[in-house]
Length: 128
Length: 176
Image (cartoon, rainbow over all chains, first blue to last red; front, side):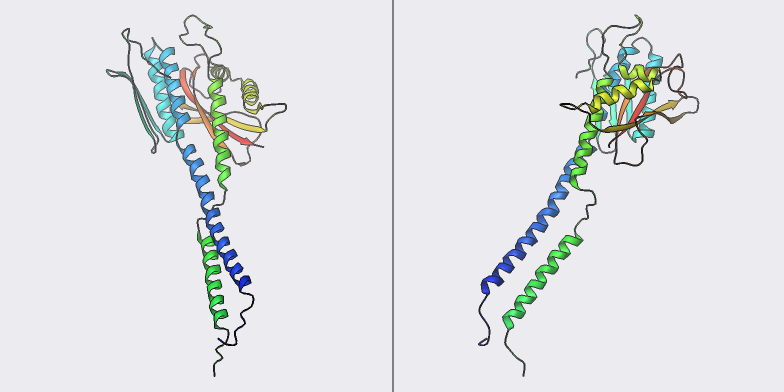
Protein backbone atom coordinates (compact mmCIF):
# COMPACT_ATOMS: atom_id res chain seq x y z
CA UNK A 1 0.00 0.00 0.00
CA UNK A 2 3.07 2.28 0.11
CA UNK A 3 2.65 3.56 -3.39
CA UNK A 4 -1.04 4.48 -2.95
CA UNK A 5 -1.97 8.11 -3.50
CA UNK A 6 -4.07 9.17 -0.52
CA UNK A 7 -5.18 12.51 -1.91
CA UNK A 8 -8.72 13.25 -2.96
CA UNK A 9 -10.45 10.99 -0.43
CA UNK A 10 -13.15 13.61 0.15
CA UNK A 11 -14.08 13.47 -3.50
CA UNK A 12 -14.40 9.69 -3.32
CA UNK A 13 -16.52 9.92 -0.16
CA UNK A 14 -18.83 12.48 -1.78
CA UNK A 15 -19.20 10.15 -4.71
CA UNK A 16 -20.43 7.42 -2.40
CA UNK A 17 -22.80 9.74 -0.55
CA UNK A 18 -24.35 11.01 -3.79
CA UNK A 19 -24.78 7.54 -5.25
CA UNK A 20 -26.50 6.31 -2.09
CA UNK A 21 -28.76 9.38 -2.13
CA UNK A 22 -29.76 8.68 -5.74
CA UNK A 23 -30.47 5.07 -4.77
CA UNK A 24 -32.91 6.10 -2.05
CA UNK A 25 -34.55 8.75 -4.19
CA UNK A 26 -35.23 6.11 -6.83
CA UNK A 27 -36.97 3.89 -4.26
CA UNK A 28 -39.00 6.82 -2.97
CA UNK A 29 -40.14 7.87 -6.45
CA UNK A 30 -41.11 4.31 -7.19
CA UNK A 31 -43.28 3.93 -4.12
CA UNK A 32 -44.98 7.32 -4.37
CA UNK A 33 -46.36 6.58 -7.83
CA UNK A 34 -47.87 3.31 -6.64
CA UNK A 35 -49.43 4.89 -3.56
CA UNK A 36 -51.21 7.58 -5.60
CA UNK A 37 -52.53 4.99 -8.00
CA UNK A 38 -53.90 2.56 -5.46
CA UNK A 39 -55.63 5.32 -3.46
CA UNK A 40 -57.47 6.72 -6.46
CA UNK A 41 -58.27 3.26 -7.79
CA UNK A 42 -59.82 2.09 -4.56
CA UNK A 43 -62.02 5.19 -4.52
CA UNK A 44 -63.13 4.48 -8.09
CA UNK A 45 -63.67 0.82 -7.33
CA UNK A 46 -66.06 1.38 -4.44
CA UNK A 47 -69.56 1.74 -5.93
CA UNK A 48 -70.73 4.58 -3.69
CA UNK A 49 -72.62 6.40 -6.44
CA UNK A 50 -74.14 3.16 -7.73
CA UNK A 51 -75.68 2.38 -4.36
CA UNK A 52 -76.88 5.95 -3.76
CA UNK A 53 -78.41 5.98 -7.23
CA UNK A 54 -80.10 2.62 -6.67
CA UNK A 55 -81.59 3.71 -3.34
CA UNK A 56 -82.99 6.95 -4.76
CA UNK A 57 -84.43 5.07 -7.74
CA UNK A 58 -86.07 2.49 -5.51
CA UNK A 59 -87.64 5.37 -3.61
CA UNK A 60 -88.98 6.85 -6.87
CA UNK A 61 -90.37 3.49 -7.97
CA UNK A 62 -91.97 2.90 -4.58
CA UNK A 63 -93.57 6.36 -4.54
CA UNK A 64 -94.66 6.40 -8.15
CA UNK A 65 -96.14 2.93 -8.41
CA UNK A 66 -97.74 2.89 -5.01
CA UNK A 67 -100.99 1.49 -6.32
CA UNK A 68 -99.69 -0.21 -9.47
CA UNK A 69 -97.64 -3.20 -8.39
CA UNK A 70 -97.50 -4.49 -11.97
CA UNK A 71 -95.51 -1.49 -13.19
CA UNK A 72 -93.50 -1.49 -9.97
CA UNK A 73 -92.37 -5.08 -10.43
CA UNK A 74 -91.69 -4.52 -14.14
CA UNK A 75 -89.46 -1.54 -13.29
CA UNK A 76 -87.62 -3.52 -10.65
CA UNK A 77 -87.11 -6.37 -13.08
CA UNK A 78 -85.72 -3.87 -15.64
CA UNK A 79 -83.12 -2.81 -13.07
CA UNK A 80 -82.23 -6.43 -12.38
CA UNK A 81 -81.78 -7.33 -16.04
CA UNK A 82 -79.95 -4.14 -17.08
CA UNK A 83 -77.59 -4.32 -14.09
CA UNK A 84 -76.59 -7.86 -15.04
CA UNK A 85 -75.92 -6.92 -18.65
CA UNK A 86 -74.40 -3.45 -18.32
CA UNK A 87 -72.92 -3.19 -14.82
CA UNK A 88 -72.07 -6.83 -14.10
CA UNK A 89 -73.87 -6.45 -10.79
CA UNK A 90 -76.66 -8.41 -9.18
CA UNK A 91 -79.41 -6.09 -8.03
CA UNK A 92 -82.51 -7.59 -6.51
CA UNK A 93 -85.48 -5.96 -4.84
CA UNK A 94 -88.06 -7.79 -2.76
CA UNK A 95 -90.77 -5.21 -2.15
CA UNK A 96 -93.30 -7.47 -0.43
CA UNK A 97 -91.04 -9.26 2.01
CA UNK A 98 -92.51 -9.54 5.53
CA UNK A 99 -89.39 -7.79 6.89
CA UNK A 100 -89.92 -4.79 4.63
CA UNK A 101 -88.54 -3.72 1.29
CA UNK A 102 -85.30 -5.58 0.69
CA UNK A 103 -82.56 -4.18 -1.52
CA UNK A 104 -79.71 -6.45 -2.45
CA UNK A 105 -76.68 -5.28 -4.43
CA UNK A 106 -73.54 -7.25 -5.27
CA UNK A 107 -71.01 -6.34 -7.92
CA UNK A 108 -68.48 -9.00 -6.97
CA UNK A 109 -66.42 -6.67 -4.80
CA UNK A 110 -68.99 -4.83 -2.73
CA UNK A 111 -72.04 -6.45 -1.23
CA UNK A 112 -74.86 -4.21 -0.02
CA UNK A 113 -77.98 -5.40 1.75
CA UNK A 114 -80.76 -3.31 3.20
CA UNK A 115 -84.13 -3.90 4.77
CA UNK A 116 -86.38 -0.86 4.58
CA UNK A 117 -88.92 -1.09 7.38
CA UNK A 118 -92.54 -0.03 7.48
CA UNK A 119 -94.27 2.44 9.78
CA UNK A 120 -97.69 1.93 11.47
CA UNK A 121 -99.57 2.93 8.31
CA UNK A 122 -97.68 0.39 6.25
CA UNK A 123 -95.52 2.92 4.40
CA UNK A 124 -91.84 2.27 3.93
CA UNK A 125 -89.17 4.36 5.59
CA UNK A 126 -86.42 5.36 3.17
CA UNK A 127 -83.83 7.20 5.20
CA UNK A 128 -81.42 9.50 3.44
CA UNK B 1 5.27 -10.24 -10.39
CA UNK B 2 1.79 -8.90 -9.82
CA UNK B 3 1.71 -5.24 -8.95
CA UNK B 4 -0.05 -4.83 -5.61
CA UNK B 5 -0.59 -1.10 -5.84
CA UNK B 6 -4.04 0.51 -6.12
CA UNK B 7 -6.04 -2.24 -4.39
CA UNK B 8 -8.28 0.25 -2.61
CA UNK B 9 -9.21 1.76 -5.97
CA UNK B 10 -10.18 -1.66 -7.23
CA UNK B 11 -12.44 -2.32 -4.22
CA UNK B 12 -13.94 1.13 -4.68
CA UNK B 13 -14.64 0.39 -8.30
CA UNK B 14 -16.34 -2.91 -7.46
CA UNK B 15 -18.47 -1.24 -4.75
CA UNK B 16 -19.53 1.53 -7.14
CA UNK B 17 -20.40 -0.99 -9.84
CA UNK B 18 -22.51 -2.99 -7.40
CA UNK B 19 -24.35 0.15 -6.31
CA UNK B 20 -25.04 1.28 -9.86
CA UNK B 21 -26.18 -2.18 -10.94
CA UNK B 22 -28.54 -2.52 -7.97
CA UNK B 23 -30.04 0.90 -8.61
CA UNK B 24 -30.58 0.24 -12.30
CA UNK B 25 -32.03 -3.20 -11.54
CA UNK B 26 -34.42 -1.74 -8.97
CA UNK B 27 -35.63 1.04 -11.24
CA UNK B 28 -36.06 -1.12 -14.33
CA UNK B 29 -37.41 -4.25 -12.70
CA UNK B 30 -39.96 -2.56 -10.45
CA UNK B 31 -43.62 -2.36 -11.44
CA UNK B 32 -43.85 -0.33 -14.59
CA UNK B 33 -46.57 2.29 -14.21
CA UNK B 34 -47.47 3.54 -17.64
CA UNK B 35 -50.14 5.97 -16.50
CA UNK B 36 -49.05 8.18 -13.67
CA UNK B 37 -50.88 8.17 -10.35
CA UNK B 38 -52.42 11.59 -10.90
CA UNK B 39 -54.42 10.37 -13.91
CA UNK B 40 -56.54 8.22 -11.63
CA UNK B 41 -57.15 11.13 -9.29
CA UNK B 42 -58.46 13.26 -12.19
CA UNK B 43 -60.60 10.34 -13.35
CA UNK B 44 -62.04 10.03 -9.88
CA UNK B 45 -62.88 13.73 -9.74
CA UNK B 46 -64.50 13.65 -13.18
CA UNK B 47 -66.54 10.61 -12.19
CA UNK B 48 -67.71 12.36 -9.03
CA UNK B 49 -68.66 15.46 -11.02
CA UNK B 50 -70.61 13.41 -13.56
CA UNK B 51 -72.50 11.50 -10.90
CA UNK B 52 -73.34 14.76 -9.11
CA UNK B 53 -74.64 16.37 -12.30
CA UNK B 54 -76.85 13.38 -13.08
CA UNK B 55 -78.11 13.26 -9.49
CA UNK B 56 -79.03 16.95 -9.63
CA UNK B 57 -80.79 16.51 -12.96
CA UNK B 58 -82.72 13.54 -11.57
CA UNK B 59 -84.25 15.58 -8.74
CA UNK B 60 -87.72 16.98 -9.34
CA UNK B 61 -87.50 20.78 -9.42
CA UNK B 62 -91.02 21.11 -8.09
CA UNK B 63 -93.27 19.28 -5.72
CA UNK B 64 -96.36 20.13 -7.74
CA UNK B 65 -97.74 17.24 -9.70
CA UNK B 66 -98.34 17.85 -13.39
CA UNK B 67 -101.16 15.34 -13.21
CA UNK B 68 -103.13 14.56 -10.02
CA UNK B 69 -102.73 10.84 -10.63
CA UNK B 70 -98.92 11.12 -10.50
CA UNK B 71 -97.64 10.05 -7.14
CA UNK B 72 -94.15 11.40 -7.49
CA UNK B 73 -93.21 14.43 -9.62
CA UNK B 74 -90.97 13.91 -12.61
CA UNK B 75 -87.40 15.12 -12.68
CA UNK B 76 -85.78 17.09 -15.50
CA UNK B 77 -83.83 14.04 -16.58
CA UNK B 78 -86.93 11.85 -16.68
CA UNK B 79 -88.77 14.40 -18.78
CA UNK B 80 -85.84 14.76 -21.21
CA UNK B 81 -85.64 11.03 -21.83
CA UNK B 82 -89.38 10.54 -21.79
CA UNK B 83 -89.78 13.09 -24.60
CA UNK B 84 -86.54 12.21 -26.42
CA UNK B 85 -85.39 15.81 -25.87
CA UNK B 86 -81.74 15.49 -26.88
CA UNK B 87 -80.88 19.21 -27.09
CA UNK B 88 -82.52 19.84 -23.74
CA UNK B 89 -80.43 17.15 -22.11
CA UNK B 90 -77.24 18.33 -23.80
CA UNK B 91 -77.74 21.98 -22.80
CA UNK B 92 -78.59 21.20 -19.19
CA UNK B 93 -75.86 18.61 -18.76
CA UNK B 94 -73.18 20.86 -20.19
CA UNK B 95 -74.37 23.86 -18.18
CA UNK B 96 -74.17 21.90 -14.94
CA UNK B 97 -70.87 20.17 -15.66
CA UNK B 98 -68.85 22.98 -17.27
CA UNK B 99 -69.77 25.84 -14.96
CA UNK B 100 -66.68 26.99 -13.08
CA UNK B 101 -66.02 29.54 -10.39
CA UNK B 102 -65.37 32.82 -12.16
CA UNK B 103 -65.91 33.48 -15.82
CA UNK B 104 -65.58 31.12 -18.73
CA UNK B 105 -66.39 27.46 -19.17
CA UNK B 106 -64.67 24.20 -18.43
CA UNK B 107 -64.01 21.94 -21.41
CA UNK B 108 -65.91 18.73 -20.78
CA UNK B 109 -67.55 16.61 -23.45
CA UNK B 110 -69.91 13.69 -23.19
CA UNK B 111 -71.55 10.92 -25.14
CA UNK B 112 -74.73 9.39 -23.74
CA UNK B 113 -76.57 6.21 -24.53
CA UNK B 114 -79.53 4.45 -23.02
CA UNK B 115 -79.76 0.78 -22.07
CA UNK B 116 -83.18 -0.74 -21.74
CA UNK B 117 -84.78 -4.10 -21.24
CA UNK B 118 -86.80 -5.43 -24.14
CA UNK B 119 -89.58 -7.56 -22.66
CA UNK B 120 -90.57 -9.36 -25.85
CA UNK B 121 -87.06 -10.43 -26.82
CA UNK B 122 -86.02 -10.86 -23.16
CA UNK B 123 -82.75 -9.02 -23.69
CA UNK B 124 -81.00 -5.77 -22.81
CA UNK B 125 -80.34 -3.39 -25.67
CA UNK B 126 -78.54 -0.08 -25.96
CA UNK B 127 -79.39 2.89 -28.09
CA UNK B 128 -77.51 6.13 -28.71
CA UNK B 129 -79.09 9.15 -27.05
CA UNK B 130 -77.01 12.26 -27.68
CA UNK B 131 -73.48 13.64 -27.48
CA UNK B 132 -71.67 16.95 -27.45
CA UNK B 133 -68.83 15.64 -29.60
CA UNK B 134 -67.85 12.35 -31.22
CA UNK B 135 -65.82 10.07 -29.00
CA UNK B 136 -62.40 9.12 -30.41
CA UNK B 137 -60.97 7.08 -27.55
CA UNK B 138 -59.99 9.95 -25.34
CA UNK B 139 -59.30 9.08 -21.71
CA UNK B 140 -62.89 8.94 -20.50
CA UNK B 141 -64.89 7.84 -17.47
CA UNK B 142 -68.37 6.34 -17.43
CA UNK B 143 -71.15 7.52 -15.14
CA UNK B 144 -74.60 5.99 -15.00
CA UNK B 145 -78.02 6.81 -13.64
CA UNK B 146 -81.23 4.81 -13.33
CA UNK B 147 -84.09 6.71 -14.88
CA UNK B 148 -87.72 5.77 -14.42
CA UNK B 149 -89.81 6.85 -17.38
CA UNK B 150 -93.38 6.58 -18.53
CA UNK B 151 -93.26 5.49 -22.15
CA UNK B 152 -96.89 4.46 -22.49
CA UNK B 153 -97.36 7.09 -25.21
CA UNK B 154 -94.18 5.94 -27.02
CA UNK B 155 -92.65 9.42 -26.97
CA UNK B 156 -89.17 8.37 -25.88
CA UNK B 157 -86.15 7.16 -27.81
CA UNK B 158 -87.20 4.69 -30.50
CA UNK B 159 -86.74 1.04 -29.58
CA UNK B 160 -87.94 1.27 -25.99
CA UNK B 161 -90.93 -0.82 -24.93
CA UNK B 162 -94.24 1.01 -24.80
CA UNK B 163 -94.72 0.89 -21.02
CA UNK B 164 -93.56 2.39 -17.75
CA UNK B 165 -90.01 1.24 -17.20
CA UNK B 166 -86.61 1.90 -15.74
CA UNK B 167 -83.75 2.51 -18.14
CA UNK B 168 -80.07 3.04 -17.52
CA UNK B 169 -78.54 6.25 -18.79
CA UNK B 170 -74.84 5.79 -19.47
CA UNK B 171 -72.68 8.85 -20.02
CA UNK B 172 -69.07 8.84 -21.15
CA UNK B 173 -67.28 11.93 -19.90
CA UNK B 174 -63.93 13.31 -20.96
CA UNK B 175 -61.96 16.53 -20.89
CA UNK B 176 -60.90 18.29 -24.06
